[in-house]
Length: 256
Image (cartoon, rainbow, N blue to C red):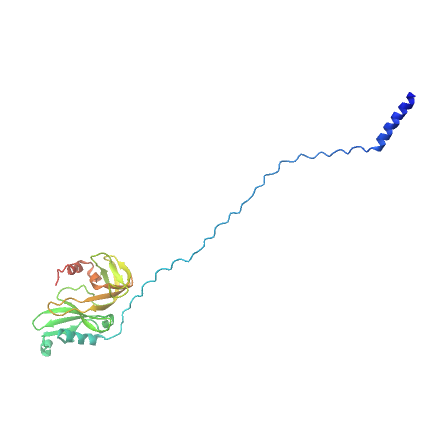
């Protein structure tokens, strides 16, 4: 009986081993290395400058240009004879003046070259049978008419011919330059004292008077540098003088 139980036990063990499959070993996972940190790259956009329309610069005022045409030297001579009551002579000499017998005893002679009329300014000399002599200037206005500017018996600060260099000599500060021959015109700039300007032409804006107590007329120079425009004759002097001393004396009324 004991042998039979032992047999069954062995048989059961044998049958049990054949009927169940051995457990498949679970593969051991390889140890995972720590995940590398994920770096997020943020794209930085460089801002593009937006060019907004810039305010356009104020256009420079249109500069009035002088006329080089119009009545020339003969017209200026005729106007001078009429306005001064004089007789024009090609060569100013007492004998010739006596022969001409001018009604006021005054003879004049054009000293500028005839082609200088294109600049709008002409220089004359005058001689009287009474013995006095002086120089005077005729200027052409915007309408093309010639008229007496002023006369003097002493040194003049007006250049002998144009074009010519001038010195800025305004006593009030920089000499103002305008778009036209008038202080009411638009400004085109200013020039500091003693700076050289290049004058190209002249225009008479107010005739002077040849009467004994008559006043000096007013005129403007057209300049091409360093600023283009017009400058009052009272603010400049001939650069040939080298300084503003004569101009300042005239402005102070120290010279007749």
